[in-house]
Image (cartoon, rainbow, N blue to C red; front, side, top):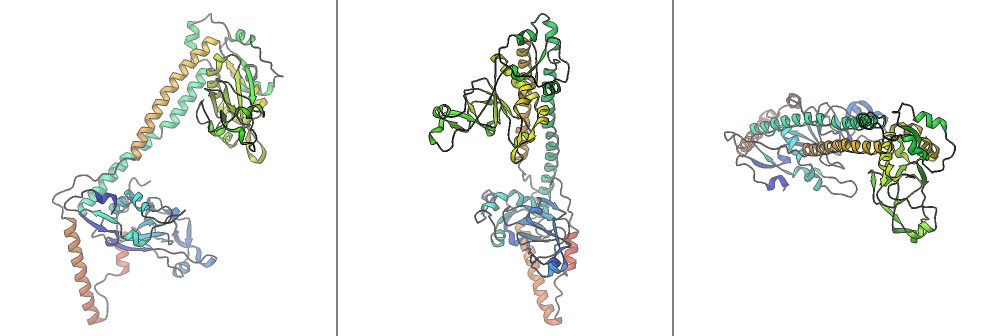
Length: 498
């Protein structure tokens, strides 16, 4: 019994198996390798074409000859489709005349008994239960026998229509809310970039400078640096210092502000080098901007017997090699002593009080520095050390650095809180129950409707047998064309099925 049926259902509802609510079948596949069977005019659906909504296109098509030479069937509009292999329970409703392969079951719903869209929404809500009923290893499947034995709650027809109307109204409202929410992430990204741009052009602290006119300029701070610096690469420096700074600021190449260190990998053949207590940071650890620990660890012995060096707390880490550089430039600050692999660089500032400021600048330069990334061996991406060492950083007076960090962190924290609220609202919408709301006590109970339909079917079958005996023709059954016309007359508008 399905989970939904473990709940108490209203008095005028009933319980039916799926086999009782319509005519079921499945498709087929014309023999592969026969060109005359494929690239025809008949859309031929596979599970990948199902979209949990109205299906109006297919990736492949077959010919009339392929249809006749296989167990595929031509389906009209308004037929329910459900995946039986792999993506069990994935749904669709035919919005075109089409055929399907054998992995898709279909149902012509009995329109006197069940509303098509009620059936659709009910099965969509039962997907996890259908999946649980599947069998198999890597690709689970569910047979038509199991599928047709699946039990569902059946309200009176009028209540089915009201349930569908309520669901679709809620879905429409939910969809509007989702569309509004999806505008938030790009706005937040734009806000963060605007904050950083204002910070490192001096705009964010223009008022602070006017209130503190006698602050020692950055040039005096930089003149006290002792870090040895190789010859300046003017091309990189000039192209990365392409806007005017406030008078008390100065452009400085990163390499002059501290020591740039590389990483390495201890021998994998020596087990004593691994699973120690020292974090060994690689690009896969660079998902946050604060690094305390890592996935992999090495030992003190590994440091003593390899080129790997310990990186102190407060260093700035950069990913300088890997396919991730196709779209982002990960940076982070160390919150503990770590080591890094060969795809990373670590920058240890001479003045440790600058590290938070330098972290924010490193985030700001992401889009610019990615233009200097080049293709390396086997197509991977690489940022060469001279580029990073000679990149111009805007340096304000030390007190203004602290004020910039304070203001930026406050604004970015506000953005983070908004983003958290966005994620919570999105999760709420994603989990919004498609509730069945109040029923009308005057509706004919579904059990009585079922009894009446069964009686009418029995009467028609008796009339058919009598007609066969007297005329040899089947007069009690409607033509296939008439049934198809009835199905095509079903209103197929499905709001909220995107």
